[in-house]
Image (spheres, rainbow, N blue to C red):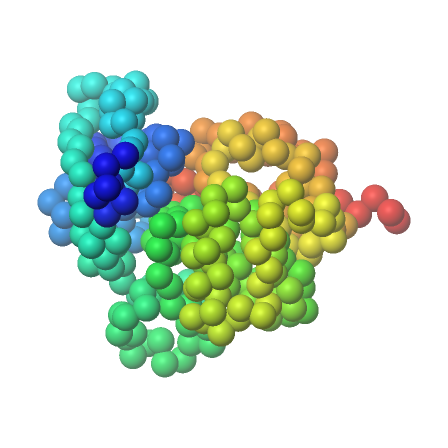
Length: 302
């Protein structure tokens, strides 16, 4: 690694009509951030849940550590989307460019009636004056700004949930946005875990920024108590959701809720099947081709 490599990030750009597939490829290939723009770069993808973007062709941008080899990522994009259906470009960007680039595209956004998420230095619209919850966020090197459909679906669920005095586990916390929201919405204790150390750093920093640091613990993922959470949030990807189903479900208390996100519509049946013996699911929530599943654990003690 060169002395300057820590000041750079690999940026891979996919121009395609299949944005959700490109996002999924970037995430499975280890992207540290993903943005979806209009092909003209004029718009961000911020449709309301259940709606589709206002454009057909998208510019999907993945940010990776500088030592990442772009070739396997490009190959995976062509395999998933089809060589004729995607145009790909890769480049190294100075850190100052990529760490601040997301702020140019992320705007304050409302979830439910009164939950707002905004970048740390962004002005809020007048409508936010009535908000009961305002989350300020700087994701750093971790996923989670509220604009990605998987995160947005979880935030929409949290905006409607009764979290007063609840114990919440954020399994795969990224920037900490879901853990921080749960703390602000009344949870008495929130545990946030991730396999990426940078995510835990970002979560602690953002929790302090939002005044909820004392409510949020960030232990090692193997040190989390096995059960007893009223709400478990797992915004990861379909494959680990299926593989880790026994572990994740074991954290949910009887009658507790489990919210699963990070999956495409074609993965819904397989993910539901992995948890079917323990959970009773509500109807899926959709945002474009992304889906969140919320289920309640059956209380077998009665």
